[in-house]
Image (cartoon, rainbow over all chains, first blue to last red; front, side):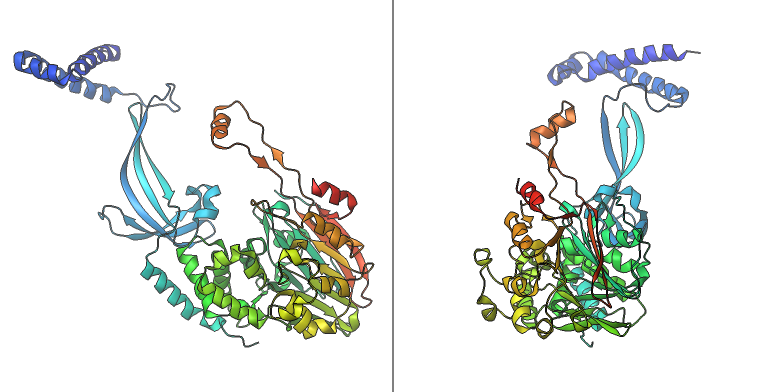
Length: 184
Length: 393
């Protein structure tokens, strides 16, 4: 059975060869393909071997240890789900919000979210009824390692539709009409 | 975190105590009044470092917030309204008193609309207050009391002596004016324009039988004149009697019945706009009246009281106190770290100053009308020539 070091050595050699073959100038690659089909067959073989080696390596992968002892050279993220939220009410430790999934794949729902997910410095600006936010679930890739994260991003101004505001005001005016008297 | 060493001595049942609280450069003021017999009234609310200062004061003095019977919102400027909803939610037995200007459909509608559709901290604070009132079960406590010129807020009797709390403003004319102005503006814009909302301010007068004691809490009421005419405005009161100080001087029956003021919390942070020569000349006695004021500073380089007004007020009385001296701004030094270098590219210079909380407490005996004690806590100071010269720099 091959040791991990042997696998790594073969893996990186093949990966370098693949890289060289893939990132060759387009015109030159076209010419090569036309003139020498053996190279193409060789590349297919290399690709399948890399895939096999990669699968074996993944099986033997050790449990990752955090914090990583290697410096992070690159980070990229990809959103996997986005909910559009609007604050309905605010309690002492949490706030309730109406959520609508951005692609419409899930039914809208009302949830209670802990206040601590929002930076305390932003509370004064963002914690107001009607304020909108995006709740983004995303994959974060660091040096090939993937973690899943979520983030609440508040929009700078609330965006209630005109008819929603009108309905809200009318309801409130009816409810508070008893205060608009001067009987004492 | 605020930490002020306040002596915990409770006033007796027959004592009136007035406490002026200032939030320093955080620009806010509040007044806590003991209305005899463990009944308290809070006029306006302000915050510093996340603390609602009137609540902080009550807590420090170990006074139960349930003993507060009235919370007066004189007007809806940021420096008078911050933390009002929190104060109202803690003081469950307190009735909220608002200027009568508030009691009209247009203002309610503006509050609800801006609460939902605009960035309006004022509307949100007022809206939350209304929600708190609406959640109450007591029919009296859930309705705001609307105050206007010559209206009685409350009255009590202690040892056979009557104590009456009145509001001296705003006038009915101001109510109509405000309604018209609101048609072309928003509540927040009106609040940002000092003059309009200040003219709606409720001025509170506490009067004890037989002129024993006469207390005036001026809020932010202004005189209806421009700055140029500041100290010589005689003659304009009659022409403008409908609003501002002119309304009180010319039209108020309650004001006419009273004489020397023993305590004056100056209006509009002792500014030139809030200075009413007629009242200051006729109702302030140099050796009898205590005058207190709070500091106001904003980012637009507005600083109240103005330099020369400190001298002007001091010339009228022997006892003039301010809740905070103007703190000296500190400049943040440029550093060498990456963040500091980045910041330096964007911001030329940053100045910081430490907001200070100052508390001035004055206690009177209702029976004799005499002052019992007078104490300054935190950054509160007596205004003297030394303070005035340092204030000018």
